[in-house]
Image 1 (tube, rainbow, N blue to C red):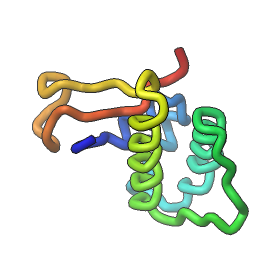
Image 2 (cartoon, one colour):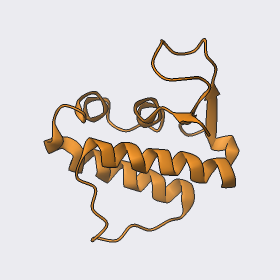
Image 3 (spheres, helix red, strand yellow):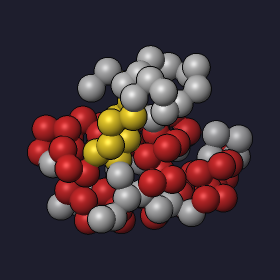
Image 4 (tube, rainbow, N blue to C red):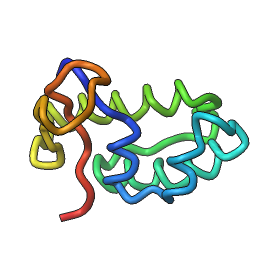
Length: 103
């Protein structure tokens, strides 16, 4: 996995659209976004998060989504979508891997 796209993954996983649109601008909503995201990660992977596992910034959220992408690449590739160079604008280098929603 060379490139991921955390924001696209959050949308496709069904995290509330307002949280996804604004988590880079408003750190106050990161906690709300995380409540949804952690539930989805636990259901996808079976991993359990502890109370002391803290995520405080948008970079932490992006890192968590990137780690999930790598985990799924190894354990459950059917949960990922590979977006080609024609799928996205000029941001980053394709192909991107994103976590797909429920299927």
